Each structure stands twice: as structure tokens, then as C-alpha cells.
Image 1 (cartoon, rainbow, N blue to C red):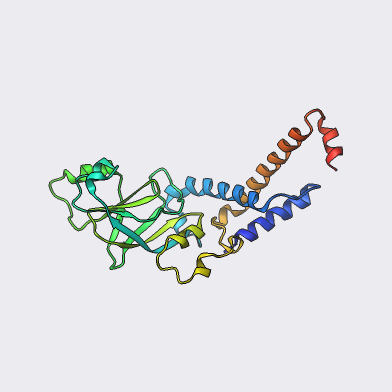
Image 2: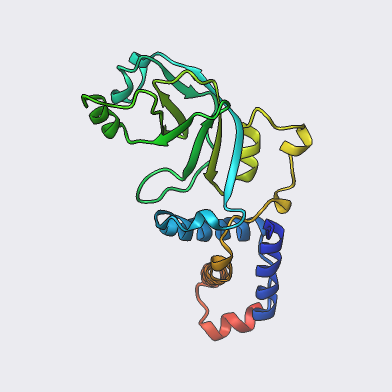
Length: 232
């Protein structure tokens, strides 16, 4: 899969071939590119077709949970749970579609699976006469994971996030400090192959707009021809 460095290098190459001055901050390029990729992914997330794309899903192994008092939970629908688990750390920033969380799966270390549920649906489910007692659910709020009616202290997560480094940092199973502190330019640039060229074009377009705006701010009294002569 292409890295952040690969993406930035391609954008810089296009900038140099199309402008007199291709000097743009690498971090600005990456930030704009990630925003463009995030928007496209969120638009397509509900189509259920992204899961087959290579490199889109990020795994977080050994994500720690701790027991909290249900009555003190800010989520009203969980206040009556017999048990309630909340993640000890925040999740990396995810991508959300119309149907909710970009978390693809939550699984306990012994293979028990959890399904995503909205609190309102959880409340209605509890009112049903016949329910599957072994069914497990998860919900996210303020980047924390909640497991109502569960006591599992470790879960494995698969999710769509652009923050690969953040995913490594919240895992309790990371093998070494060096692995957690990888170079940002060597990390995967999270974007489906079919969107990659479009993200590059959209990034170039926004950077061009930023450049034009900066020229207007620096030379407010010059017309376009004068600005062009001045910056050359």
C-alpha cells in the first residue's frame, strides 16, 4: 500500500510541474490529503463495499476496558445495566457513515463478538419479552468504547481510521516502543485505490486555492498580471 510519504511526493511532483514554486509544507499536504480521503470514505462507508479494499481496515489488539458504575454513566440508556465496561483509553479518530460508527468489529479474546447499537435501540431491545441473552453490543461516545452488560476487560477491534499511529499507541499488545514510534511518512496512506487519483487531484486543487489566497493577502493592491510578474 502507498505510504504517506508516497502521497506527499506525488503531490509535490505535480506542484513543481504546474507552478513556478512547488514549495509547500509536507504536513499541510498530508493534512489536506487525509481530509479529502476521509470525506470520500465516509460517503462510501454505508455501501458496505470498502471492506474488501486493501489496507483500509486497522486492527487494534488488546484494547483495555474497565468496569464503571452504570448509574454514573452519562448515557441514560446504560444506567440500568447490570454491568458496564468503558475503554480506559480513547479510540483513534474514526470515520463515520450515515449508519454510525466506522468500527467494523469488536471481539473479546475468547471470540465473543459485539454488534454496534444505538442507545435508543438498546432501550427498546431491553423491553422485549424474548431476547437473546448471549447477544453482546457496543457503542461509542466521545471516542470511548462502551460494552453494556459485559465484563470483558480486553477486546480486539477492527475499524476504519486514518490515524494508524494512534491505533498502535492505544493497543496493549504493541511489541516494542520503536514499533509505537514509527515514522509518520512510512505509515500507510489510508485511501482506497479507486479514490487515490481523485484525492491527489482534490488536494492539488485545494493547495492551489490556498496559494492564490496567500498571494492576494501578500499583494492586496496588485492585479493578477502584476502578482504573476512579482512572484516569478
